[in-house]
Image (cartoon, rainbow, N blue to C red; front, side, top):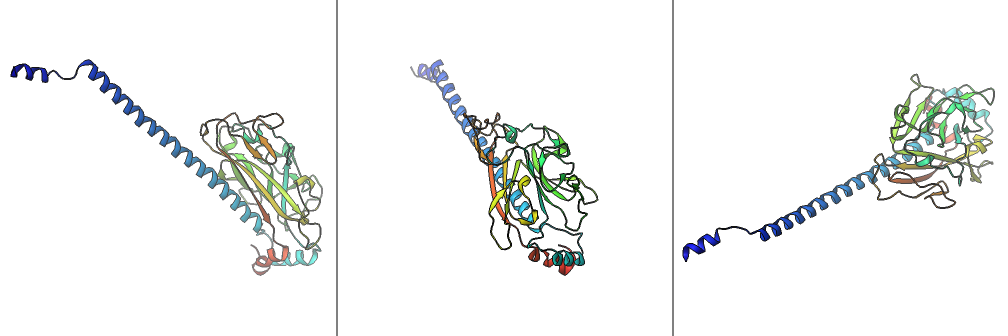
Length: 306
């Protein structure tokens, strides 16, 4: 009897026990894999959100710093004195902007703002409007505004068709390749290199409105697009809006609807089309008050340049 009990106890698991153990192990492995996948996607999503938010915040901060200073290192103290004494205007602003045609507030831009595979075009072939003159040759995305500054000490165009040379901020793509992510670029045509400098990745669209104060000491009476600015000396504020999008696709469960520059992009009747991809998108906006000429020129008058 003792031998029989020993033999029975050493027979191991039966088929039913083995199947139950396998099912439990498979369930446990599936649960662990699910938790790992969820945590990985959550970490990826969080990283993308942080990156998009930070790129947008830094891009706006950089633009504000650059445009507030609007440097003119080629101006001598004597030139600044002459400009200040000769100008009857309260602002010697040399901020200039170019409006992408068909992108005024409330105008539907179709899929252009969120088309991650949009190709760059040459700005000197048309499509950008402004009273500031013809925009020089830039490789940028259609539907996105251009903003920059032109030195008041640089050569002044003699006609409306003369190209304005200066420092420009715009949205383009690295190497002008459609497959690369869109970014905010800076190009200084007055520098010896004249090359485009990529600043912040993930900026898909730039829109700028210009606050106009017709009289000295008065506040902004209206915000208009660049093509409606009659006198750039009257521009005392800027309203800048950026559309940011993640470099990686597939972060959202479905296409993400969003509101940009007065238009809802969700594919509904009367609205703009919804994105075809599942990228994460954010819209950031800020308003910049420009300094007056005398406050702006203090450093220039003292040291010969900002």
